[in-house]
Length: 385
Image (cartoon, rainbow, N blue to C red; front, side):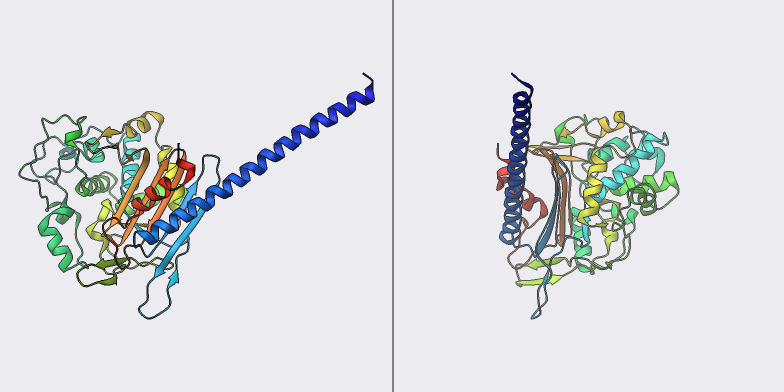
């Protein structure tokens, strides 16, 4: 074989390889476009079907592709124009707040200021009545036995009557529907029956952080998380019900009267305090989700402790230290008095953030970001085995 023929063969071989790469790239791009269209269709369909005014969905693929979607409206005006949802809006994030509180608590553990098995009474004597050796770990795990103040009948009666009322954290802890039956000293906290989702746990954690740092919880979150990660659109108002623009208005549907009411600035966030008073955007939460699940400012050993997801007794659901897994979706969800709902999670390598703004006419208890999430993954070919 002479030199000229060999050169032609090499050129032809290189051309075939290049053509194959180009074809694979084109197929990959086509697949991504198809996936994106399916995700958008499923998202918009879910928002409409569940009677949600509007929502925002951010997704990051395992290869780093980012998709942003919006659906529905940010504002419902009687007799006026409907203002469409956009992806840059602020929402109240409910219990995703717990991930920020848990992170600060774990940083204090990392720094040796406290440890996971420190007794609450050693830091906050007298705050928890009949403190049966409750530890910081058990608060983080939702395994302390503390009743949930936000489901207490007297609290709910007062809250509905005066949603603008300013509550102190200690006042919130005075409501506990399970006080009389609470006995946790002899409970195995690795057992599913000891799990109870309770906002009271994270109010106590907030108080512990304030006691240990001699600082407000919102300041600690800002200094330790928001500032270094440049989460400029995230905040934790403890008293003010106002929201700075641009934000999505949060709506409540009353099935008795048939009315849809804008409650976005009528509820004082002190009712949720460290358990659910956060405000953020989908973009900020995507940054935070990735940092949090990767062990922001804690070492691998402590991250391993955090990610020990213990079964809760509910099918497919387990909970670690400020992180939950529901049928393989790892992160946290949130609900702020029903008028805002949220979910930030990692599912099969994809990172999701979905934020919604309550219920439109006909919306019920399933009008949530989590319901939207499951409709999206179940109706997209991307997640079908």
